[in-house]
Amino acid sequence: MEGVKNVLSYVLGYLQKIGKSLMLPVAVLPAAAILLGVGYWISEVVAPDNIAAVFLQSAGNAIIGYIPILFAVGVAYGLSKKKDGAAALAGLVAYLVFITMLSPGTVDGLFAADFGDLEDGVQLAFENRENAFLGILSGIIGGHTFNRFRDVELPKALGFFSGKRAVAIMTAGITLVISIPFFWIWPGIFNALTSFGVTMGDLGHFGAGVYGFFNRLLIPLGLHHALNAVFWFEGFGIADLELFLAQAEEAIPGETGRYMAGYFPIFMFGLPGAALAMVHTAKPENRTRVASIMFSAAFASFFTGITEPIEFSFLFVAPLLFLVHAVFTGISMIIASAIPAISGFGFSAGVIDMGLQAANPLAENWWALLIMGAIFFPIYYFSFRFLIVKFDIPTPGRRQKMGGAAEDMSNEEIAAEMLKALGGKANITDFDYCVTRLRLKLEDPEKVDREALKEYGATDVMVSGKNVQVIVGTGAQFIAEKMEAHVE
Image (spheres, rainbow, N blue to C red):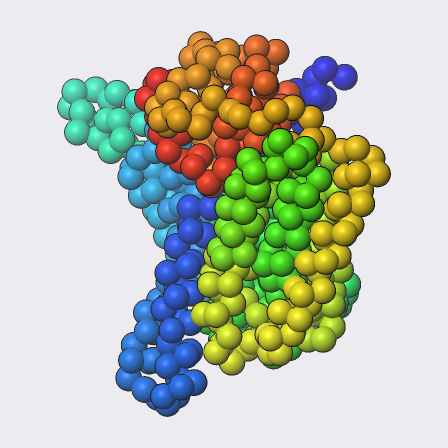
């Protein structure tokens, strides 16, 4: 049983790393969304063929068109133990080798007198190899190759190619070997991924709801980024975000965008309603402090679509509230898809992205999402308030006097105290971070002092085997960078 537990812990930790690595290339998409959004508005207000609109849309599509490369580079960099440009280069090398080896020309030369003699499904697979799936796989190969060979020391005669310089060479060789079985298995993988997309499409509005429900449920594990990649990018048979932003020919008006649209009412209105409920149910002496925290969290959710500061305030203390939140999200996705009220985003479902994409020709009845939001705000407020009071749920400010030692401390001081609360430098075997949380692997998780971490600003702490996540909010990067200096 202990062995199974360790395996599950390892798999979970690895999937969390992949999910976190996906955030780096995804962080580039807001640039594309801004360029395309402004271009769409100019087309709408001035003229469709306005030179400024064409210029901006072309620049935005340049980013969208190379998403597989962004994933290859970003995932490799994110998986590397020492964040280094050589890892990113290795990811790019792996991707270039992959798509060249699996190209129709190579397949034709190796296996067939004429590529056209192959079955239609097989042809289609090799013609559509430039996608996010192979980009992510290339990034995984590049990242692990960097970790394995970055410190290799060759004989003096070959000394120039030692260390990091060996990484790209080794990556090319390893990818070349891995590509050999892909001549046979890639068509099967491609068709399976395509079938998944078709199956989800056949579920229609309900499929969007199922996706939204599980997307929220996976947040505690940090795996929602991986799920998003399946629904948003080319290579998994759906590519909702990619097709929406690029106005691709394959996009279906009234459908493309259904795996994003339902988030707007929840992120912009529903969660702020939940935040207000938590303020009103806090103890009177804590209410001012809770209000200041929740106001900034609600503003972030409404304005940018960053929801974790609110969600983690009740996620672990009240799984019931989080389940209700996941159900409401699924319902919102179903309703938005059924209307259809369609919009999309490059970063998240906040008012910025809504405004930018309102002029996108694929945005249909997007204003109805605001009406939905006006309905979801009181639904969240009264549901959360009722459940918090009914079950005496310890949301922020309902138990102890709120203060917090971190209020007047610098990020460096907070990082030092959090390091102590995690059992010290010797207890940390792996360290990383994402937008709102510190991700660590500890030698002994029993040494974690949860209360001390919360005292120094953590919203909550999640322990799964030796994998620990410390939720600290949108300042995670700055605390992590200070802590990293101590860890190294």
